[in-house]
Image (cartoon, rainbow, N blue to C red; front, side, top):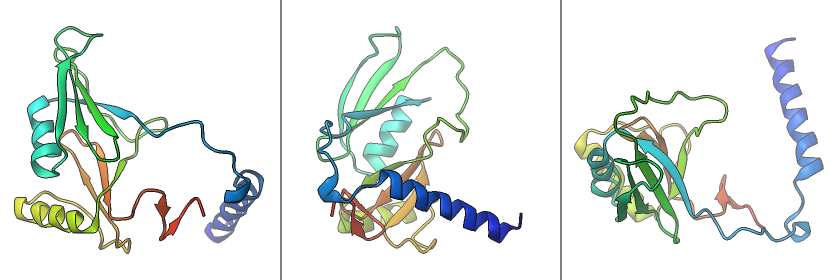
Length: 170
């Protein structure tokens, strides 16, 4: 199978899946969810994580408590807007290794920010020398960067429920 025929087969499979499962908005049932309450990640250094998410990106720290499941561990949250939280645990003393991109893992967390704030964050990243990619990848609304522990973060200027320049529920 050539690379071109393999790509055609993959796109044909996507077409089949869309036809079977992707219903027009008027035919979709309402979701039973209210949204993501929080995503929970693991960090190696509480203060470095606070410095990145609050100090660099501007997401306020809203809680910092002990982890009720592991003595000596902290559990803390950042407000990423729309009543959504990004949570972290540290697990000191466990000797955890950095995650690798793998099936079942998180590839990145995409956080929507208004374009003016997106531009301010971009200036701050440039000023501090924090590496990122985009919008040079041809995706004008996205910047991709890594937090201190290598967690992939996408900052995008699209509003919620938008992808590829269009609303997903219309």
